[in-house]
Image (cartoon, rainbow, N blue to C red; front, side, top):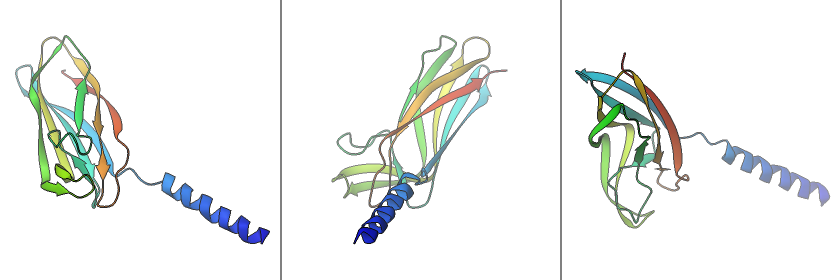
Length: 151
């Protein structure tokens, strides 16, 4: 009986260990591209593995955590407009949240235009997102960014 109990505990703990090692389904990368005199486009790229989704900035607030971008104030940078989003978009009722959502799969590009007011600098801050598949959601995550801008 004692041996069966020990085997059960070993299997149980190894199951928890495997769950804890689950790969993050989203990989983020960041780049600044010069688009004009002192103007740049920041691209926040999310590479979402098949079967998983991240949510739009504009999804129903009573549902999943929308993707959000939070830049630290920098007097050398002026944000122009809002962050745009493009990728494989799916809109509609989501049974996990029981509301209409906007979600993306595959490669998702979020872009922010900026104007550099003076010299080279960095855009710093963080983004927040939530990833789900058709059965589960991971807790919201924050990812810091530090993007070099200018010569």
